[in-house]
Image 1 (tube, rainbow, N blue to C red):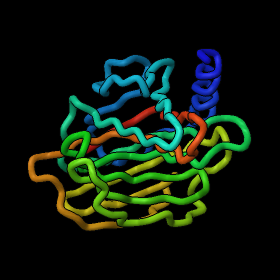
Image 2 (cartoon, one colour):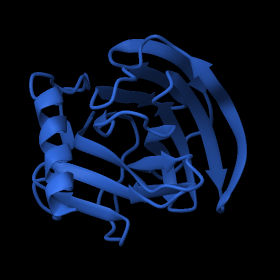
Image 3 (cartoon, rainbow, N blue to C red):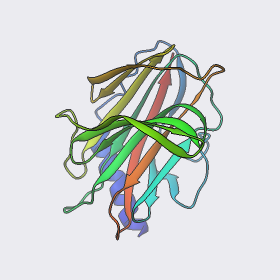
Image 4 (cartoon, rainbow, N blue to C red):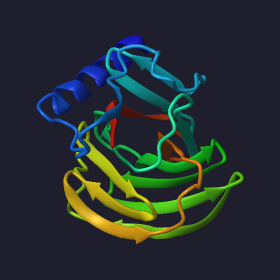
Length: 207
């Protein structure tokens, strides 16, 4: 199992090594390449951080989220690089970027699926209140096994812009948390019988 995870991490690094995260802010607030566990993330049995990878180990039919616990922002440009697992016949998987987070039960989620669709949703007090954008097809998503995708949310005041691999896919106005907010990442496994992994190789937040 350890060898398989290491191979997956290496494949992700090879897929993303030539790319730089596209956050536009001039001041770097936070940056993590997941070389160790010191980046301020919650430690869970379903999470592993090592060798330049943040790995969600997802049970069947399961979603995991992880908000950074050490940084709070207001206006921010947040980016992350997600990598699908290697191998054929993958289940439907989701990789998400979390923003406007207050705690692990209240946040917004911008996610992509390895079938070429994206969504934007809101969670409040542990319950999903509704989907702002539901399973919208876009050619911007790289869907092949082992492929990488850059997710980006540019949050300025109450205005949001969403990007996948540099392509703007949606703009949105909403009510940002008054006293600042937290950011994070998430993984989804929609297979009802098999475990799966979703991998992230880096994250950057600028202002």
